Length: 158
Image (cartoon, rainbow, N blue to C red; front, side, top):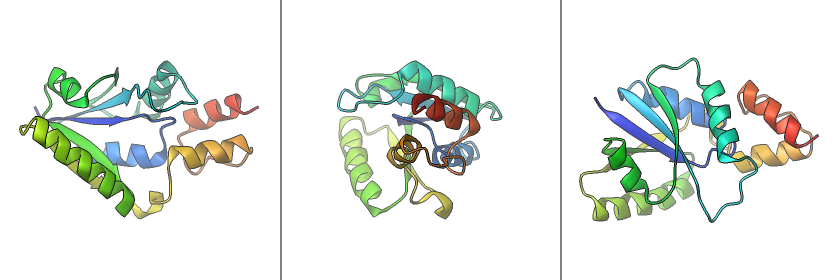
């Protein structure tokens, strides 16, 4: 069984993330969406809130697992019996950052491969920070996030 680990902060999950997951499920038997605990970030939503939103937003999908992790991603992937790390790319700047990480991961464990999935052009401009800013100013986030996320954003910024 080919399992891919799709790590991220997902604060919050967007339609771009969902697109990557749906397309990855066409290539892999299982996708583990791994919500990372990044000490360098100050998330709007708790890990538990993010996991709940992801579960609600992906309930239409099969062969998906939602989990959390902290520490070294390679250790987590090994724990999940995965040799594949999945990363979504929007722009050249994403590639440069992710390429460096992929090379470092390969240096640490040459058995693990990083697979990049280019986002659909509909989502090239989309990221969680932009969505949070739109919500903070009470803009319409409906086109950018699943319904469960839209509701949680509106609750946070009432």
